[in-house]
Each structure stands twice: as C-alpha cells, then as structure tokens.
Amino acid sequence: MNVQRAQEIASSPIMANVLCDGSPIYIQHVNEQRETARIYAMNHPEEEREVPLYTLTEQVQVLE
Image (tube, rainbow, N blue to C red):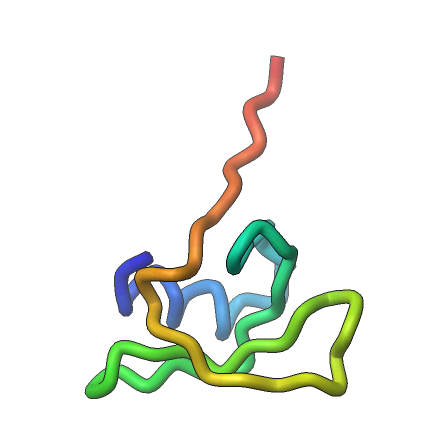
C-alpha cells in the first residue's frame, strides 16, 4: 500500500477492509518518512505494532 492511500484510510471515518498477513487490521497512524503504519488487529486491539506499508493490502468489495 502506498503512503497516500494509507493516510486516507487512517483519517477516514469510514472503516476500510485492510489486511496485514491475512488478518483484518485498523490503521492508527502513518509515518510518511519511514513508510510504516501503526496498526492493531481487529480481534486484538491491545496488540499495537508498527509495520512496513508494503505488508498492508486493501480488499475492495465488488458490488454485483
């Protein structure tokens, strides 16, 4: 994921479907210089961690 998109997701009031290693996560903060994000897994909000942005993927829903 690129820095701009990660920042958009982090600042949006709408929850995006973002995964890290296959698990749904919430982006708390994006560090533009380091290209990392402070995240936590949706099922473990107490376990915050910082990860490289390239490990994040956005799942886009397709409406049929």
